[in-house]
Length: 232
Image (cartoon, rainbow, N blue to C red; front, side, top):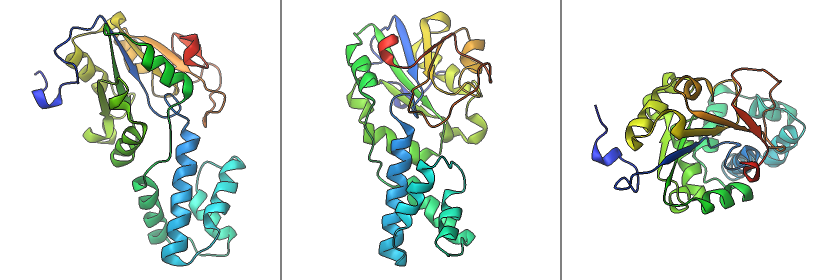
């Protein structure tokens, strides 16, 4: 069944020759910027509401030191505070619902701005729905040439990548499939399995400042690897 008209992409009256679909985190912007923005928001909340000073700085120090899990719990413990589960839940809520202070990577902004009317551009991104929507809004993607954004969490976590549902949905929306479609993303553990099975062209962008670094041949690799959109 075709999508309803309310679910159709911007510029749907046009017939596009090609379709480029992007991942979001560490693809169009640096995910570390979002993390630091969120930790700052949590720190400000803890100071204003709980009277806990310096939590934001402690969390940032842990992140900059390379820690990627249990930052809230361990930072509270470092300050001699009990990481009660209810407090951690509230901190997570503040983190996911904050207004992100992020911007497009310069090479991504240039690349998107260079596309002509023959190429459609869309987005497929995993992650908690509210947080991903806030990122898209903060980056102003719909005003920069992105015709459609799909947050897979709207269907539930079972539909996150590598589930192929989002890719098939995008194919139906734009009427393009196979080699006419390119997916650009960063994570070989989940990003490229579905589009490769559908015959899409795939590109992994391995930004030097990315959060996650993957070993060679880890997961399903893309057709080619770049470090910047200038190489695309």
